[in-house]
Length: 571
Image (cartoon, rainbow, N blue to C red; front, top):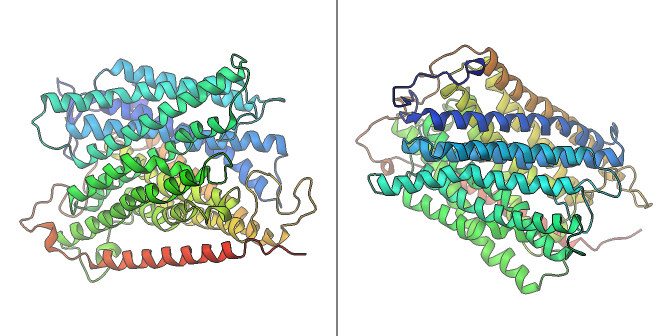
């Protein structure tokens, strides 16, 4: 096998027992997790490369790219990081949450392989179409809004990629069907249940996206004489935002899995956590409405319903997880004798383990940065101060970069150790990398938000602070913040590159090593105690929750203040 990456020891039936999780893993499931995970890391490498041009152009002191090149690089950055890196990882997560957790073979492996090949083909076609864009075609960015035309190959590539994603997800659904038909009965494990919720949301998003891109493709090849731009926008956001909701639910599933395996967390209430996943299924895709709150076509009633009452269902689910997961870490560690005062369960946690630190940073930063701002900007009135500004870009970096990407980095480290069975290369760099990336990306993200909220710096123009093309209006007051953004964006890119260096060096050069006590919490994953989890205090989590609510209230009040000053425009 290539570089020995697929050479684990299996019994005659193709199974092996994981020394860390105790799961019975079949080679078909493990090898496909590896393939999809490796492909995701390649997409991260490509998207990370194009982030250099984007950030160094935004930082107008450098001004690396002209307008035409900037939009190409921005489109390639967005599609590779927001879509390809995420979706390939999410298929791998379905295979972990399904056949691995349930101890089954991966069914219909030919379909899984076909799905992977189709996804790769679609991704390559999209990248080619964007890179070769020329007038009158436009670089599609993420939104690819009609009636601005993009290359027909772009729409065709998007259709192929979506179809491949659906094919790749089918083995997961077949696994669940087999489990309910031939299993021992009972409820699905919580991680499997979370993966199931992820898959349901994914199907809704992918079907909507397929309709949108087929519609646009038929228009672009002139099979249809015209396209309804408003209809296309609504269809597009079923996948444009829906794909990010897949990220969120997959990320939460990873949180439950990794905090248990490497942090000793226990689920405080499975029924409550399952209920939160159900709320996601019914409400989370409605969050896409905040992209259309400034759209003149949709009615006020539609806006109010989607941005208020319906959206709160998903928010309530996120608040449940925001308490349940830290509470599970605290109770689980106190149960193992790692209490130590109000926050001892957290301060003596295995922070040198990048799997643990990446997971916890993802939880904290997604909650305080991405989560709070998502609720605020999804509110009907407050959205006016966010829409079309760099604050929006800051928000989705708070969710996708600070939340999902850091969590997936932790998952990649975990897969390297437990499935590829490689020791992490450059041990100190591996331990430091989540800290470096979390810190630098947080500063870059906050600067984007501040520039958008305080100065209304627009998001879709490559030169904005020193010069807005076609206008005498100046935003030079935002230049100090842009300078800070530029420095930290560059440092964040270096920190992301450190992850890629550690991951690839571990796979190619790392010592083959069966994972042991360095990866699992005190007492092991299967730590047994006669004490119920509810006997142990969760007061540390309660204090953190109060801090979170105070931060949310402060941000909410501040944004209403910004809104009150929106029309104060003078000489």
